[in-house]
Length: 239
Ligand code: IPE
Ligand code: IPE
Ligand code: MG
Image (cartoon, helix red, strand yellow):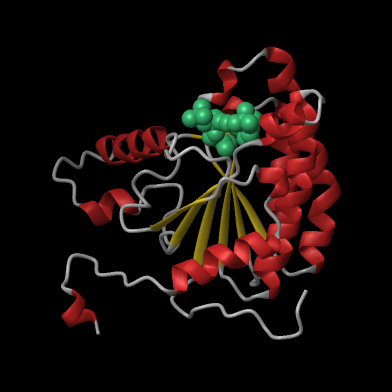
């Protein structure tokens, strides 16, 4: 790392990442796809450390989509085991680094053992006020909107405002992502935070996730720093 401090714009509070390309990374090396997930886990840890050090408030990592259950059963079960083990192995270190970890997604889809590991990690880190690390697992943007609408319907509310829906999303109370990154070369959202990224800046990298290091992240941040976010206004109004 260079000795000049990397520049983090003040307007960058929340980074969300679609960590894609693990399988291809492994296959390129003649390894099984799952080895890419293992390598990808190391990167996730590095990203959390970097964001914590740089004073980013929120990092949301997409680790398993509600559609990823459709993968071969061996891959799904490897991912579930990796998730449980990583929660166990990493939570103490995260806690020491003042990171608050929460899992966003439909937790009821996981087996009891994994649900317990999630509860334990969340409970251990719940009072930390450093980086908020949101792990999106069994998460789908459409599911999130539907579950928010269901909560309002169950409360008998029929006139629904945008704010009311936002307040029922799993991300309620959290600033929306300022920057959304997807690695792995694909240019799509794949049912990630579709509501919350309405005004996020998008950054696509061809790097496969296990190759995406903190320098690559800083390159994305530098790119974000050059952009003008207008939120519907004119450039003149903003500057
Ligand atoms: C992203 O990497 C991780 C998960 C979806 C769990 P992929 O496994 O999708 O990797 P590619 O896209 O097949 O290379
Ligand atoms: C998105 O990647 C989900 C995660 C990174 C967890 P996918 O690899 O599942 O997305 P598609 O299927 O290529 O759109
Ligand atoms: Mg993929």
